[in-house]
Length: 193
Image 1 (tube, one colour):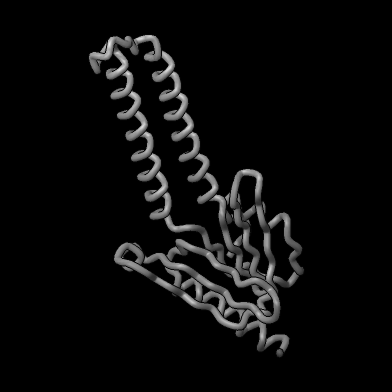
Image 2 (cartoon, one colour; image 1 turned 120 degrees about the vertical axis):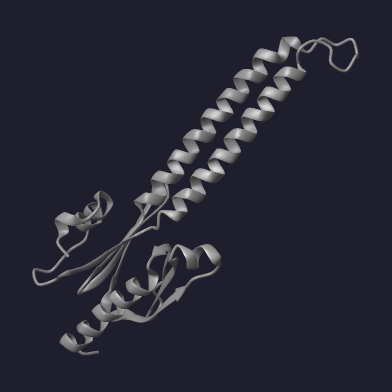
């Protein structure tokens, strides 16, 4: 795989990790687009719920709806502004969630695996694992959508005290697993245990 064909985020990882001259890029694993659909769907539901509640409370605050003698129309602008702020915050949070989701990437080379994982805008983690330290690669596809859209969770188990690598919403996870195991076997053939 040619490094010039990498996504923008993979190029960022590629710049930050050390590569040997004879090291070859095997594959780039990005998140499946189905996860974006989930993020946008939930964000849209939250935004529509906030819009509905804001409109209902604003309409209710018009005059004395309960017949108590208390005129609630004075709070109507405050409810509208608060609702507008919450709606804007919901849209912004959805866009941030989508950006973070698309930013996660795993690079598999002939020598190592590098993972760029964004937890928040300000919390980025780049992990590297020697391809020789891999003990096992597990693929899990749970649910109807995972099978229909061919995505799953890829778990790379490591030797020793290193933390396992987990990458959710992996597109074509069996092919990704095959690429990793193949790179591992070629590395063992080249360097031994």
